Length: 123
Image (cartoon, rainbow, N blue to C red; front, top):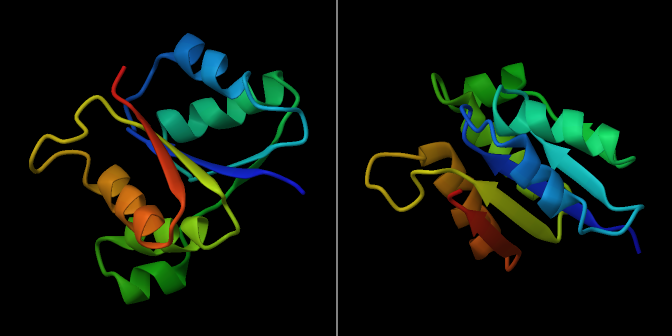
């Protein structure tokens, strides 16, 4: 069975080596799912390719924008979590800080509600 793993988090995440060490621990054949922003999403596309993994980068759609005006990331998070992932890797230095990491926390909350395991990294 193919393992699908959502990688989500900060748009300012820049620790490529940390990400590489974590993604490199997964078996070849795993597929990483990520979004369309800078930071962790862009690094996941880069590092995943370097390590030989398939990376499914999902983009916000007009439907996301219609459903969530000025917060289309919520629709993207919903679709990524519902895409068959069995694990979420969440990278954000401000996880748990009130008012911060809203998008990352939203994805974590969706995954938890769906019974999907979450591993969080703040550094």
